[in-house]
Amino acid sequence: MQTLPLRSRALFLRLFGIFLFVAFTTACSEITSTPTPAPNTQTQAQGAKRIGDFSRILGTVYLRAPILERPNRTSGFLTSSSGYSPERIHNFIYLDTQTEQTLQLLPDNNAIILDHTSFPEPIQDQTKERVITWFLYRVVKNDTNQDNRLSEADTQVLAVSDAGGQDYTELIDGVEGIHGHTLRDPETLLVIYRKDGALLLSSIDLPQRALIQTTELPSFGPDVWLGNSQ
Image (cartoon, rainbow, N blue to C red):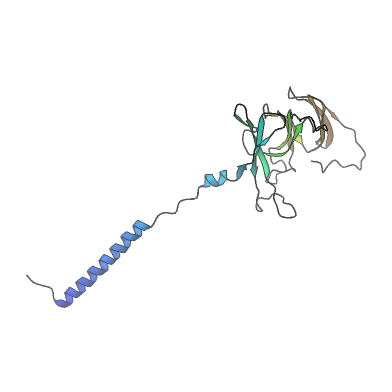
């Protein structure tokens, strides 16, 4: 059998070694390399809000927790002088400790709840436990001033519910600010608020979730500006 010349054999062995080296490194690269997973945008979006701690609603079997959002510096929401951005409330979750059932106050978490007031008001007699029966909510649902954010500068909705969040009902919309509220009797709520540049007083039948009547309060002078309320 004819053999290759010595020089040709050396060249063949060198080329063969290079081929083996390239094949080996390619195979190792394919085995060890793993694709970088795509970011889970759904998880990130869900993480924009969080559920807070449950606290007891006085005199009832209910607990309540807020659904919160902590805005960052680029979100466009106002911060305090220290740079701290308070968490905004987007919803409430009510828990009945007897049935262990939960109730979500609003159908989604897109609105913001500016404030929530419990009734009856706190009592002076410390020997008696306060029993909360109603809640009044001030809610912003739409960007009415077109500044691309929901805030107190937008018009608001006044709504009420039972102590456990049941029968949430929106009663007054277009509210520009609220100037006070109190119970006239255990089932009638009085609310003073600003709407369409006028100062109004409405009485609300809480069990029936209905406006009884609304009257416009008189002017208190041309130098009195209706603004800077809650």
